[in-house]
Every structure is written in C-alpha cells, then in structure tokens.
Image 1: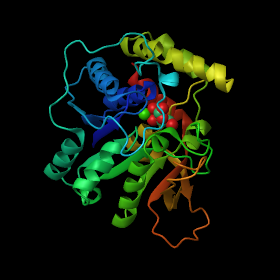
Image 2: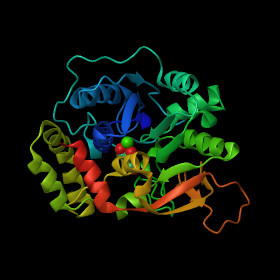
Image 3: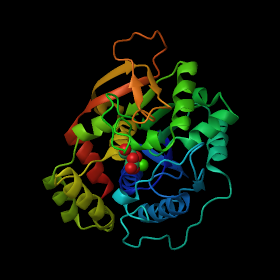
Image 4: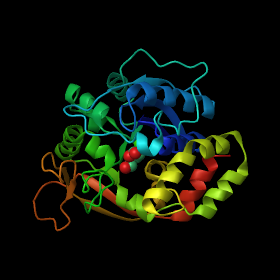
Length: 312
Ligand code: BDR
Ligand code: CA
C-alpha cells in the first residue's frame, strides 16, 4: 500500500493525477499540500478542496507557500485557466483547508510515521524546500520522493526555453531540494517534461474517457477543454499531455517504468535562458553523487489505463 502525500498546484493535470491516485486500489491519499504555481495559492487551495469533493474521500488540504522563495517568474494560467481548473466554475461546496501550514504538516506526518509516506511533488518545490530548511533530515524520513519537474536535455516548456515550469517557477527551491537529496545520498524519482512529451495521450484515448460519461469523466472533460484548445492552437496537436499523471503513475506502480537512468541533476539559478534549467550529468563527469533516477520510458498502455481508472 502506498501512502501518498501530494504536493500540488492544481492545475488541470494535477487534478487528473489526484483522481488517479484516489482510485488506485493499492494507494491512499493521506494529504494534499497546496502551493502557488500554475495559479496563485488562493486558487490552488480552492481547487484542491474541490478535487477532494470530486473524489469523495476525507483528505485534508493544507495551504503552503504562495510565492516562490526569491523571485516570481511566471504562472501558467494561460494553459490551465485563470482559476487553474479551466474556468468552468468548479468550487468547493463544503470543505475547508486545515489551519496548519503545508510544510509543517509534511514534517509532522513524516515524523509520525518515518519511512512510510511517499511524497509526490507535482508543483513548484517551494513547500518542500521550506520543510527541508526546517528539518534537513526529511529525506531519510520518506519512503520515496517522486517529482514532476525539469527537462533533462533542456527542452523546456517556459519562456526561458531550457527550463520546465515547476522548476522555473521556483529555481531556488528546486536547487535546495535537489542538493538535499544529493547530500542524503538518495534518489529523486524524476519525471520530466521531455518524458511527458514522449507519452502524449492520443485523441482516441481521450474520446474513450469522455464516453465514460461518469461524474469524474465529465469533471475531467470540463476542466481540460481549455488546455486541449491551447495544445491545439499553440502546439498544433489534437492530444493531451499528462505531466502530473505520468509522475503519479510512477508513484503508484513503479514497475510501469521500462527505461530509467541514474544521474546527477543540478538546477541553474542564473542566465537569461538557463535560469531554472535542470543540468544533467549524462556523461558522469562531475564526480558528484547521483541524486535522480530519471524516468525515460513507461508502458503507455498501462499509463492510460491508470488514468482511465481515475475517471470511472
Ligand atoms: C508541470 O507544470 C504545470 O503547468 C503542470 O501542472 C505540471 O506540473 C508541467 O511542466
Ligand atoms: Ca502541477
């Protein structure tokens, strides 16, 4: 059984990842930690609560950091909608966030049950960095740490070209986190933007999900319409990309991975086109301890089936 703590900035693909985790027979969602990212914290907290109502499980939501540690770069409202969930009006009806800060909730839970929780970070790493500054021993208290972030050959998806959104939104936080896992000697299970592009979701699969016509598939259809339109208009494709669901698939079923490489990854903090870049030591030249298991390929059919399960 995977006990998941999900750090998230919902976000259309965050929502789908959470639906997927909630539906998995061998996983429990223990908490959602909201962070500012795709849109501001006010929205990501509200969206987290709305998603918890959709999955109909009693999952606590903790509000975390609103802004990056140092500089606000950009958000992704142009992809996810101004409200982060496609601007179709999903708001929580009854639920409210907990009083505890997300970084403190993460540390408390890790201390209560050392080695039991898998942390899945599918937003900027601000909350995790703050938690690490408060308790640098956090890595040894987690079972696994799965991160959606980066572009391991620098083919990013932000205005900074070489950087991926979750890392570029808060590079300093990502730097703190990647160094912490290096110092600990553990491996972040890293799912980057380039792997996401290699595992795009074809239109016929999406049509199949829409045809399910369940409350969850209708929710997904509604919130993803704007993102699909963005992909069609700006990327010239009629398909979806599921960055956060891909990371969640690896968290839920690690044996879905068919190809991965262990390497050292560091985060660039400077440069007009390199701030937020995840520089990967492919040639193993820098002599530093590898800190990432970089997921390169997964079984796509199993990935799509896991997503579909979340929409039933
Ligand atoms: C990541 O950035 C966000 O826009 C998505 O939710 C995902 O976590 C992809 O680069
Ligand atoms: Ca996200």
